[in-house]
Amino acid sequence: MEVVGPAPVVVAARPTSRTARKGAGPSSWASMKKFLSGTGAIQRILNFDPRAITPEIRKEVDKLLQEKANSFDHATIYRVSVAAAPLAKWVSANVKYSTVLVKISPMEEKLSKATETLQVAQQKLVEYKDQLVEIDEKVKQLREEFESRTREAEVLRVGLERAQTTLSKANNLMSKMSGEKVNTMKCLGAEILRTPTEAAWNALDSHIFLSQRLAKELNGHVLDQYKNPGNPLAHYEGTAEEIFEQTKGKLDYMVMSAGTGGTVTGTAMKLKQLIPGIKIVGVDPHGSILARPDSMNDGSARTGQGRLQGYHVEGIGYDFVPTVLDTEVVDYWIKTDDDESFAMGRNVIRHEGLLIGGSCGATMAGAYRFIREQKIGAGKTVGVLFADSSRNYMSKNMDDDWMKKEGFKIDEIVESTKPENKGLYDKLFGF
Image (cartoon, rainbow, N blue to C red):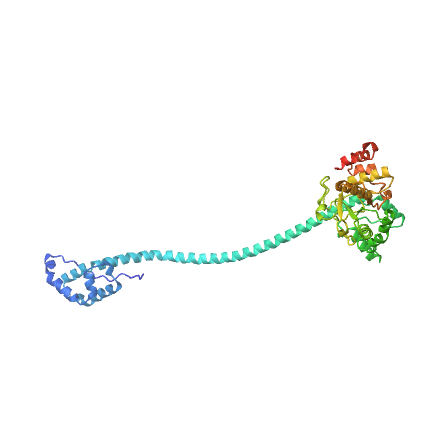
């Protein structure tokens, strides 16, 4: 919108006498209209239309009045003044508008300053946003570092707990290895270094890792029964031949427990060559993972003994499958618990006079369970291999106090060995 300033106003004195007013008759007004007839803009003023007041009209009227003012008589000037009254109103309105603009001008200046302040604030906001992004990134890095340190702290905590457990067991001679074995090795001049039973086979504190490290440091040699081909070969050429000779080949089932796997693998391979149709039964304690299919290793429904949980029977079962064990040569797998293994071991000692150890008790318990479950009756021959003796376990499963201390119900186990309590073993162990 174009702002137009106030137009010059011709001050025309109103005639005071009646004669003067009469003198300005129609002829004078007609001459005025004639005088103005050549000016289209002035004609529009005389026929006033407020919307027609434009800057061009104002200029025309201003020019005309300045050029012709001296030739008008008083009446004509009055008539022109009356005719120009709308123009005067328009001028007055514009004067008011200009006054408003004068008042608005300081507000515009303030608004301009406020706009500049707002722009500065917006720029600051952008800078603050950039700073917030940097802060968020730093917080993210700190959070990741905190989580990493937390994981490290958890690993250290678990390691400390294991170390404390190991130290406690070492101090109380609570490791799985029997005292008889330790004392025998000491008499042979060996230095005993204990490792925790719970250590995984590939852990830094396992007996396997320790033996390899010592062999390297002392320039020694580890026979390594887990990978040494001589392990199963000895049973292939020796144990299996002896069994075949003593049974004259009349053998339907052969039951053996699995440790490193050398005995089972070598003996089974040779017996299957010598005795077509023979079935091999492998015994594996609950807590070990050697049995197949692997789902058999998930745990004992009777005792709750779980996968890879520690167990007391020594010499059999592992938390990994040794290289020398061929699980495919075993036709049936049987899982056993500690309590039934030790109870069966005591029954064999008392009734058969065979001084067997805990692993042999597990083998016999597995054979007994297999025979009952498969309903193997008369006319079938089942061989059970006892690979250990009680010499190494006099202070463990043959000791009532040790059995009580480890939570076994020794009174019930002893009762199960008495002839008058025939059938108690079956009742105690879920048959």
